[in-house]
Image (cartoon, rainbow over all chains, first blue to last red; front, side, top):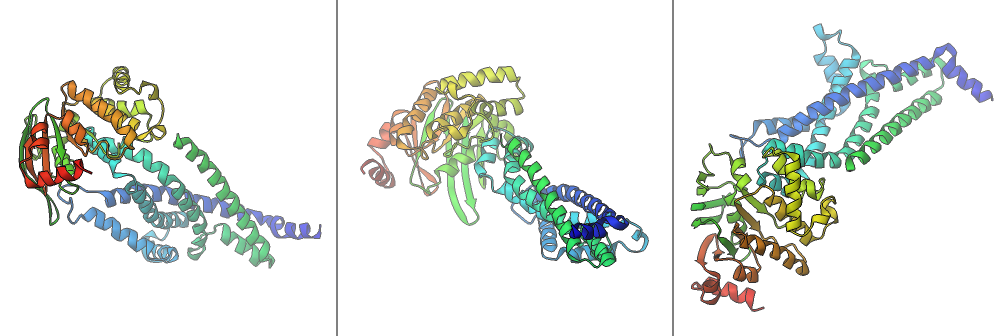
Length: 229
Length: 242
């Protein structure tokens, strides 16, 4: 009972739970923004990587090369570095007033896009070549083949990996503290600094992350089952 | 109907087809035989441009496939293909496999396509499988569906790329029976095959390919009984007397 009093002292007194709620909202918003940017840019990058068209067929293809360099650059550097570069090198001067939410969302989105692109590319390339051959042999053009035959099959293969990617993304947003964003983790630190209790706030946000990811996983499993048939 | 002139095909430095010139008329059933790696499949795949042609010409129904102005998708609507590994679309039911191309490519009405597709399934003896997914079919059934799918586009020519090579022996016959019926109905067919029995009994012309050239082009009777080339004799000796 005495411990419940302590917990109350940590979270309820001074409305400190509000830090956590605000942090939660911030984390979710950053993740959603990043996921949208990641998917859109990731699809574009994947299409660039897979592109093969006149006059670049079989030869040097600037679209594919460009996408490859982007993917290597992003995957080869830590997300913290990318985040800090974006916040401290690019969003300065007249761009200084851009909200941290946007900067963070953009940074994580640009980062996630590289991984999403590779997931999509691998999913499409992993399909049996005979599938597109069969479609093309029936007279379907590239777009119809993609739409009717390749994408529906690739989505099923890609979805589970994509879910892992977005779970990592949600957890990765906990580094926004580096550029002054107050997310879940940062809110725990604030509570610690006010109450001198280090463990409970951390555990609290850990549990919240766990709840978020399990809800998301459950939701995606439902969708996976739906697309399976 | 199909004119092949001086066809060459290389993969990088490797020359696979080294100058083939042939005419194939409407209604002919051509069996293409030869050792593995001889270029039989590549030759077949050049006829509907599944492979880029390095040089030479392939003219199908008056349309030169190597002419960039020719819409290859239009030509392919008339040139069906059946693959060794069936390549059915696993996310669609059997009936949907048949209906997809006529609806999406020819933009035909659903009801009309459905009726035609069901008739085709009856023709290959699988009308009871219309609503199942390809996963649940045997190899022979899959290949018969693949043939029906190609026929759904009402092609004038059908290309078969080793259609029975991936089948268990007891299923070869059901597929060959379907092909035999097709040949009787007057379909122009080019069949890359290891089934010498089929080549003998159904084809009215046999190509023997070796090292990327057609060494021999004759009626099955002549090719199997009195082959002129030493290589043909060796090959037939290997495949017939084992």
